[in-house]
Length: 231
Image 1 (cartoon, helix red, strand yellow):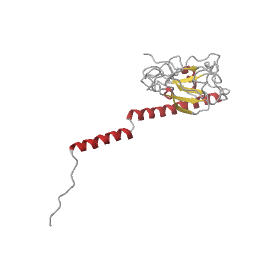
Image 2: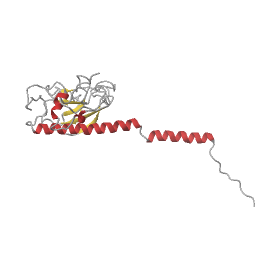
Image 3: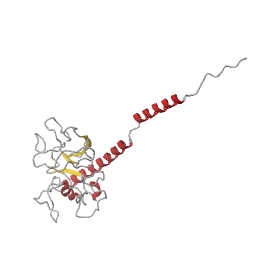
Image 4: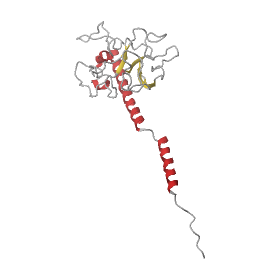
C-alpha cells in the first residue's frame, strides 16, 4: 500500500510577514496609546482634586453666611471689603481650616501656573506657582447650581484656553477643561475647537466662564486666574 504524500505545508516567508503586519495593525487599533491613557489618569486625579477644593469652598461658605470666598480676610479672620486679585488669594483662605495643605491646588503638568517642585506647605499660602485652579468670585450656596465655581486656570487674564501646552491654559492642549459647579458636580468637559472656550449651557451663552452674559454670570462674577510661576 502506497502512503500519500503530506499535502500540508508551512507558511512561506512572505506569508509570515503578511500575518505579522496584520497583527501589528490590529494591535494598534485595539490597544490605546500609552500617552492617552496616562493623560486620562492625570485628568481623573485632577478632577478629584478640584472636587475637594469645591468641598472646601462649601465648608467655608457654611461659616460665612453662605458666601463662597470672595473677599480677603483680615488678620483676625474677618471678611474685609477688599476683593482678591487672583484665584491664589481667594483659595488661600481655605487653608488650613478647610483644606489641610497646598498640594491639593498644585498640578505639576501645568507649565505656567505651577512650579515643577511640590509646594512648601508654609504660610503665606498659595504663592505664585502653587495653584493650578481658576475661581469665580461672588457666588453663594444659593447661586444657580449650573454656575462654574472652580476650573482649570485659563489663558492669562482671559477665559479661553490654549492649544500650546507650554502656554497659560494649555495643560490639556485646548481640548478639555475641568469644571466644578456651584452644586459640587464636576466633569472633564470639551473645549470648543474654534473659540478655545468651554461652551455654555445655551447658544446665547457661548462661554461658561465669561461674566456679564445674558441670563448667566453677572459682571461681578469674574473668573480669576492663578498667579504664574516665576520664570
